[in-house]
Length: 218
Image (cartoon, rainbow, N blue to C red; front, top):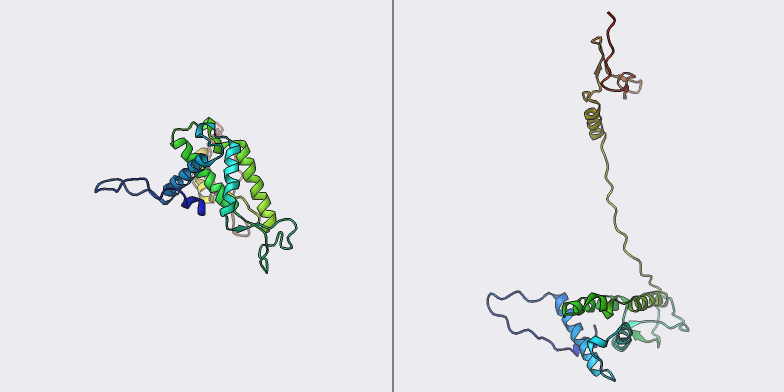
């Protein structure tokens, strides 16, 4: 976060000694700062709020409070640059927190709430009201800034089967050799024929039902 994060204590962990665990990752450090900032917000709330009484409405109120520290220009409806992704000149529209920053912040606070003993079913950061608010912010900023937020599409893995593999499977099923040669009961064999273009085609006997033996005349 912007200035709000600076209000939180810089470090809470004691100096590490040799053999102690590695320093927390950047994500963990940011999550701790965000959590401390939110707890400080609850203490300064009028009237003061406890975490147990915090609801989704209080979380939305906290997100609106953070807008004063935002750095993203969000054009209002009457602005001539509304919907313009690259405005040619400055305007008097307010600065707010970007939707992406708020969405990431809620994700960290949602995890921190449960890591600090909160129950998932009572997590105020996971309420439907918060999700709706974030969706409205995303859609509103997309229109105001002319920058649509598109969901990333998952890449599908396409499995292809080669002709050689298919021929091997068919040979296994039919019990014939790879060249599709079938021997009848009279001792004669039939195999592939070649057309005028040089492409091998199976003969009629090769496409017949396997394991069928023609009895020789007595």
